[in-house]
Image 1: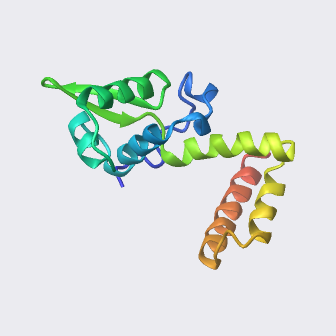
Image 2 (image 1 turned 30 degrees about the vertical axis):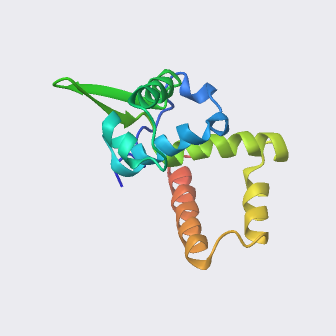
Image 3 (image 1 turned 45 degrees about the vertical axis):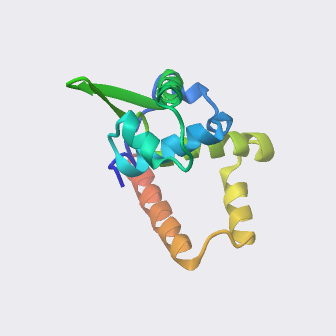
Length: 145
């Protein structure tokens, strides 16, 4: 991983308003590369894609993702290095929140129970989820929530 998985605990301005499920296939593929490889150049994105595209197309997609708030860039020499503005988990959580709000009137518990009942989680994932729930419960108690 590129170290961006848990990047940013606060929502990035503008990004919270964008629906991740509205990203196109190419935009999702680019984001996947950025999350996997960490800081990445446009050339590395082009080389990592599943289909050949022109440099101008890649740069347009990177610019669009930056305008939507998914990417940031730094300039090293004359090279743009692109980074995810938020980790994959945070973006996925926002997409799931929209689904939760739409289908389950905001009930995350209903979605999780549905996932368990649909056998979407294996034993290892259930154990990891239970451990995270326990940690969150303890933290909430300590904070007096």
